[in-house]
Image (cartoon, rainbow, N blue to C red; front, side, top):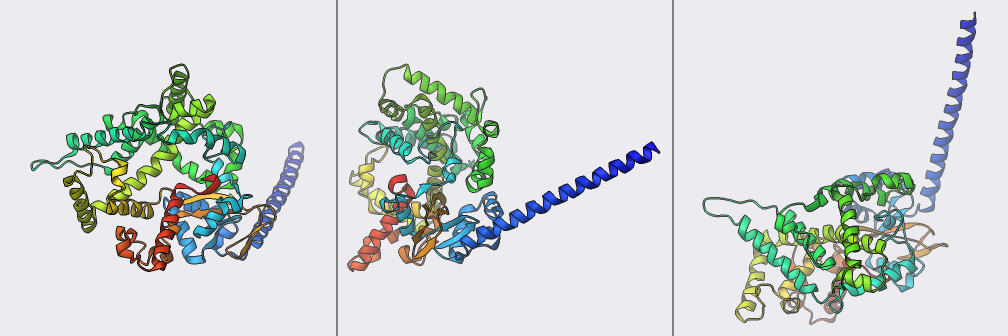
Length: 463
């Protein structure tokens, strides 16, 4: 009898627990559906993929696909210049809207949590990740001198040294002969080149990626393994809230004792900063940051930011442009003819052309601009928050608190600005004689093209 009584008691309690869990599950489902309907309703006038209107899942899936830029661009193509990609997220390929949100007329537009996902130190923001306008303005004022020749006189010569290292590596290791074909991963080599340029500019010495012809400190392997998580973190409010907890941030943050990857770069950045603080002043980027009062922690964050933010985007644009050139015989022939003529007339320095000389070669400049248009450094992101009370964008009301992403890839493929053949690499679109600038409307179009291409480098107060 006691056993039967016990079983009945357990059964009764299990039944009670089942009812409790059932109630909780039903409540959670009702809450989710209610909030989804509320989210859908407040932005119902904007169209987009149906799942994106009620859930973060569509944007998360896009982030994991490896084709985020193309998928987001397709949303604007299918649903209009301002379209929906999340319960509280819109995206625009309207260059005027992007300039408005980032410029002085859109002063009340703040950076969204998209930026904070790129904070390398959970306890400290850097220039790119801070949502605080005052902090951003202070850091920008302190750092801007390091990017100019006045405080960094070796800026161009540092790049020249790495160009020479790049050509030396190719000539010594990768030139094929009749008896042997040597294969080279151009994308990888360009990434090494970009990293050596950035590290040389930052603290006066290159890491030596080109010298080693390999992944120094296993930085690239580490970046590749964490890039997906960072992308998802930037796109998902739920993940961002979870990772804002200090315990989880610690799990995904590099430690000073790590032997490779970001952990090793964290250790290395601390060592470099401490060494520089104790040594004589130098005229490089880090030296400029120090002179203008960045704290040791801000110096360390800025050091790593140069690598993370600068190398991947720059390398992608460079390698993409080179790919277009080497696979387009007509363009390459015309570019080489211009270069050969400049060399013959001694208008180009040897062994490396100078920036001032390159600016005098119109077809080279057209190839560079077309490379930036066809290979956008960062295809989408930079989400801003619509101010409290809402605003009108391109004639349509948008509720306050809505995140609006930039579709830079879409801006660069606007047929009204760049012509019908936007999917073709054609440098001639940038030349006056090809556009027919004798007519005023064509001159205005050239100015619009130049204005839009500059969005690749940022715009306004957050640029």
